[in-house]
Length: 334
Image (tube, rainbow, N blue to C red):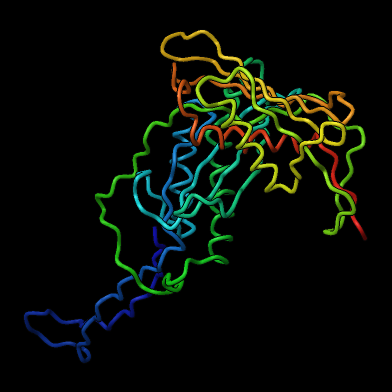
């Protein structure tokens, strides 16, 4: 929603006499009409896809808060996934316990009308874990509001620097959106959660300090086992694409490459839902285990029995964040 620019109206002099007659102490001056606020053009019009990975109530809450935070940043977010916009925003959120705290990790992908990802926003919030076993109990409205505010701010910064061609300037007046436009967000479909912290960290991990690497990290991602539908190939292909975007070289030489083995386990259906868990085991070129990245969530029963579609991309995009921590970073030239 556009942010209105406020203008001050000049106050006129008021007559001391009656408007129906009588004398006044001075000339009567009419009070001018207040200047109407001028609406500024939004930075972008973005279709808001379902937020996945979190319980329905949390997903709806953070989505609504992002819509409101976007308004304050001059970003118009649309709740209809079929609506046409400059971009589409997809979010993935997971909560996990870390000792005495709960870590809420979020990933937002911004894609253009062709489906190509043009920006990614990642971060996390910490909250007291409490005594409950379910980490989502610790995710309060204040936590999700912080996520929403930071996400909207990051979006505004990126959009200001990447304004779509032909978009009006930031100060250009625009028509107000109809007051009756709906802002109720659809109930999200549960999907696979983002990864928890990897089980083990690589002993030889190094931090990149420059942009010119002297070596490369090559990895093999074979077909995933145990996945229903087309998940075996869809998941492996999605992870390969994600790792390539992150600078990992795909290889087919087992003796000289890291190996990332995916395994899916489906729980028994209950009350129309199923538990799904994906474990990504990372091995070094000698076959030794470096650690496992696990994802777990409840999904509608049978929803992945045929095509995985965007769910594979969501799972791979989230899993890659943990997998990259288990892979060594390229040495850099100073």
